[in-house]
Image (cartoon, rainbow, N blue to C red; front, top):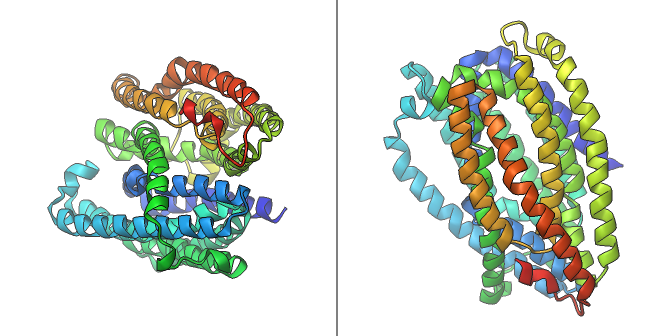
Length: 436
């Protein structure tokens, strides 16, 4: 119950912040803000998938009730993350001064480019810090205690909203807005670390617990997730960047603001379904195949029962919501709202399926699929954006999902269930990894 309330608070504060920041920044600066977030999101693969690899490894160790192994995995993952953060910090310090920010952000004003460059520096520093801190939330998810992270995240969201109001009241620039927001996120990560290690002191990392074997295992698992993350980034976090480069930064707001409304539905679905990822891994390690099947199909039908009616209502309600929220300066065309609604439903089904395959360790097939989908999606999105405007990026995603991803899932998931039914899992060994 507490986790559900926390998720609701986090999502609502995020949604409330959209009209506040749009009205305060205006279309161009808000577009810059969205492009910067997309650039950072596009760098999400920089952890080499180690965070997701750690979550799978922790859930497996937890299924075996092996505390020593869990600490070993966490310590090894933290060491890898610290090494990556150090390399990225040095690389960023070298490259940053030479970036052509007017070209990167596709703006004509040197002042806007300079403000965007400084804001990016703050975001990048936060990104570097969150790489090693990310092991905390992954460990919590692996232990199926992600609810504590969600509660802390809700507190951070409220702090972020307060920070936005303070920045607006002081008439500060975009740099201060970004600084206030990232500070709340880092603070919540540190609080999560205290909660995790206070409740599970046996998990506290120690250098003596570092294991090259564990590091290799997590990195091996992570590489598959790394490929998935790269392809996902290429396909789905590049929308704002594509619009910026094809149509200009002001057009980003026309897409990004209504997308936030439908993204709210996607976020609710993802937050509700994500806990199944480690749960699938633990259930498979224990040999509870019946539960895995039951949980998957129930989650699939539940997601469809929620997203279809909600997205339909949003198509008709969005013009009024946007007019109240951001005024008449932004009028989203009906075609964009319909395309966003269709994408929301398609994406929700894809998320449910991907979480099952991730939890079961079916990674190689997904990685190959993700590369193909990512390249096709990006190319198609650019082509369709040039031809049809802002709806092109979303059309590209829908077409690649329906034509490539869904047919592949229809092959992989029945095959997974067939193998799970045939293989008797003993002592936590996963017989389905051959599918990966």
